[in-house]
Amino acid sequence: MAALVPETVPKFTAETLRYAARQSDRCHIVPVRLRRAIKRYLREQEETHMRRKVLSLSQSFNEIKDVNLQLNASTSRELVEDPLKSLESSKRWKIKTSYGDIGLKYREDQTVAYVASRMPAVYSACYRILSEVRRRLPGFSPTKVLDFGAGTGSALWAVREVWPKSLERINLVEPSQSMQRAGQSLVKNLKNLPLIQSYDSIQSLTKDINKSDREHDLVIASYVLGEIPSLQDRITIVRQLWNLTRDVLVLVEPGTPHGSNIISQMRSHILWMEKRKRRKLEKSLNETSKDLMTLKSGAFVVAPCAHDGRCPLDKTGKYCHFVQRLERTTSQRAYKRSKGVPLRGFEDEKFCFVAFRRGLRPRESWPLDGMAFETLKEQHAKRNPEDLEIDYEDQFESEGELVPYEDDPASYDSDIIEADAVTENGDEEEEEETARADLGSGWGRIIYSPLRRGRRIEMDVCRATNREGTEGSFDHIVITQSKNPTLHHQARRSLWGDLWPF
Image (cartoon, rainbow, N blue to C red):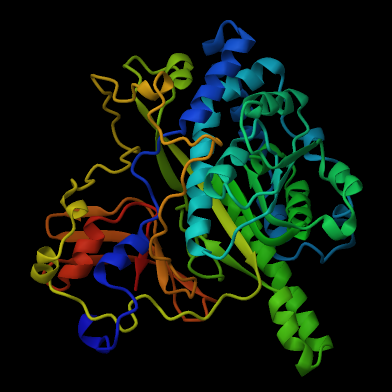
């Protein structure tokens, strides 16, 4: 590959290529302010039998999963591929129920159990996703945000960590009153908060806000669509959320086959709907109006997909998901159960997601265009101190045997002594921006953990097959040190969920 690359000024060096590709953190640490807020909230509740309540909450999630799995597959396919072809389904878009009428109703004890056991993991997944959106869209700084299915505010905390300076208003949609109260209690001691308004449904939100102010820069729906048993209601809600989106829509679900199926269905529907709308506009508009149409119509996938075509994992028996490792908080270690072995100091949160942006996919040059690869010996001479870090050979081996720690590495001394760099206004300093990963379809996505076999690296990569990003493929690629030492060095440090240049 290197021999075919023209010897021009490179867009990326080997080092910036590696930084741009990196999207995953090996182990995320929940911010000290959130850990303290959770501990304070749990002390105020004085709930007993917390382990039993955490287990009951987990059983409730499993019951919802069982209901969802009973949906008819043919009906699902019909709704996603052509939801408007029958009069019956077209009427379905006009439903007026909020998802709270058909989803999980959280009782007070379930809410407390959720804060203790699930909120840190949901926050970590949302933070990982929104951080990638920020890196891939460096000019995107949302001022107005809608969090649908806000729960106790996990996404709100993540949005504040990723874009602490630009936020002006956050609208929360959460039908559970106990969840709303918990979310308000968790943020009550934070400073410099944006304007936060809570609603129990999308309908109450649209009634309270003028039509001209209903669009949001960022709309996020995390861990909520799977709680809705009806597929028709799911698609209806996603259409409503898309209509409330001015720029970016993010959907997040658990990293299960069912969660991946939901994300795949919603991805297909949004892209189908916008392509259909664009075809109609092209027929009705003249040439002078097409430039304006380009800016306001269409949709493309920001992440994780490298293309906007049909998912190449369909009908393969595999499903697209990712994982974020996080250090367990004191509440998680206190109330979560383990199967006869000491509880680990960390957990792996598996998740599926898709992030859309309005408009057409930009035509950026591909990462390896103009790249003159250095030899491994030359790169070794120029290495940075960071290059001396250990190799993450056991990165995210969550599918294998779980080996508990003899000593708990997550001691959280910062719960007592604030070691984190927290400023007086309650906001951490923004991390330094690294090389951006352009959205011109030149990046693939590493699905599943790379296999390292000596000087040979094997990876499963989802990538675009053309520069327009209209089609994609799922490929098993092999990188050897002898044939390409620089890309081999890149592959050795790549993690599950990272980008891959091609």
